[in-house]
Amino acid sequence: MRTWLFDFDGTLVDSMPTYAGIMLRILDENHIPYGDDIIKITTPLGYAGAARLFREMGLERPVDEIVSLMQRYAVDAYTNDVPAKAHVIDVLHELKARGDDLNVLTASPHTALDPCLKRLGIFELFTNVWSCEDFGTTKADPQIYRMAAQQLKRPVEEIWFLDDNLGADKTAKAAGMRVCGVYDDSSAEYTDQIKAVCDAYIDDFSQLLELYC
Image (cartoon, rainbow, N blue to C red; front, side, top):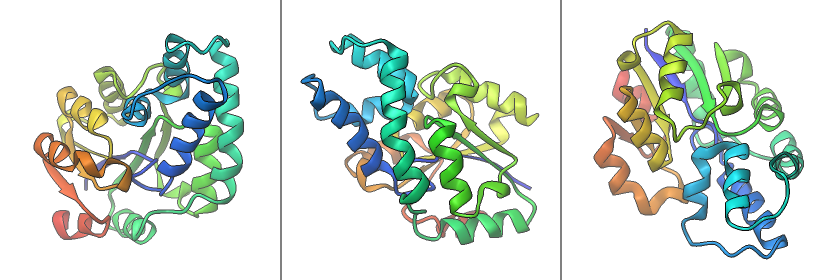
């Protein structure tokens, strides 16, 4: 049996265009300048972390108000439209059938995360569906991976973490997890860097079965 800890956005679902649109919309609406790497920076932070960053960038609104705006923009898209990535649903069912322990750790809030997984019919496959908000920190903090391991009652080094984001992969690896990088169009330019820090890398979710059966 393997214990898996999956990212959500860009790993299980093809949502990074939606996520990026939400972040950029808020910055654009408030005339806040940003660099080309803004999505890479905000992706591991969660909505609250991104909101705090936006305040540092000059957005003069309370954090909770910014987070509420992010959630409002996100809920409809995640509830109704965001699709699973190729082969994800079939592979998750196969992993579950063989007795593996499946879990989610994502920066997305439950208001978007849970309805999306339920619509896709895979929510019940997971032992735990965690948002960063459940731990009070972000995926840029190595401690979140250790806290997740404690909750899973497994040594951190025995857990496989999958993410398409370079920063999250590096941090999970620094925390002691085994890390598998995942290809996503949004992080394609960082593929070589992700491969360099990870124990494994997949271009397509079906490769999990080929690598770890």
